[in-house]
Image 1: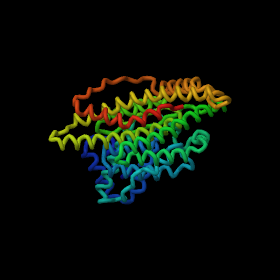
Image 2: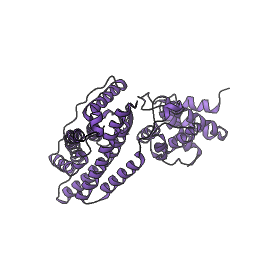
Image 3: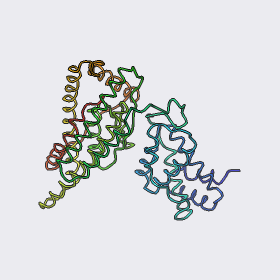
Image 4: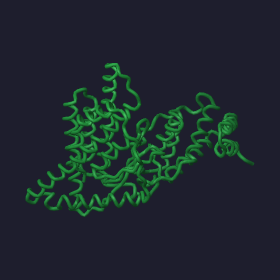
Length: 392
């Protein structure tokens, strides 16, 4: 005999429209004895998401975008209970799990509403497409889950995060520039050291990948900014506009640096845009969506140019220092050949993950004031690109 769960799922998950959700929710609301099975089925849907290449942050981001914050909390609760099955988790999972939103209480605000929200979530999870994996799923072999961390890496990342947080919080551009410059120097040196160490020890580390959310509004400009940061740091970026994220391919130290710098530049750019809008309104001119879009497009384009220039300059300086240091690390390994080999490895990995990519024509900026202010904001943030351009 068909269970209540099966009847509810048949009504809600495999038919379109709200009527099916209401019918399924009514069945479940009247059957509290099915609650445990309902949650277990949800954990199965989450497990299927891992098998299709999704990570916890990916799932919650999409649920929040397509449903609402309440549904994101329900998804987070299912994720938290599902991952208890595993003794070890892949890299990056622990930090993602720590950042999940709090799960709402079961059965609130009433049984019908709770069941309806769960069924809407399950319908979305059931339809998740397969995407390119950026790491092993939970439950993989132990050797696939672990990667030896670079010496001193946790302390270095803590210092960089602290410097960038201060740069974002200060209201003084000169102070923000100095703080960001120091963070960039730490990242640049760490990247060079990582590349040369791997070359000297013939380490078998290969490029990896991570996904970074690119949320509306102005997602095109945000994706362009992320692409500029990734390119300048010897990574490749592939934007999936439909699912709202960019996949960044590169070596682990560089991926971490891209995540940190992109987040900081986006925060600084958004704050600068808000200040520019306030100045425009104070002058009696109403700013619109076109102003904000043009501002962020100019900010992304200008920073891309600055980052590229910084990459060339810092690479040349590092190579010259290595050539002039007798017995130095750069002299031993040869910095430019090492970087070229890593660039090739990243390109090959990106092409294997995404054998078919397309280019999209970007709609031009239409607000001159927005473009001008965005360019000026990028110039003020230029130090975040210059010292930080070299990535091993």
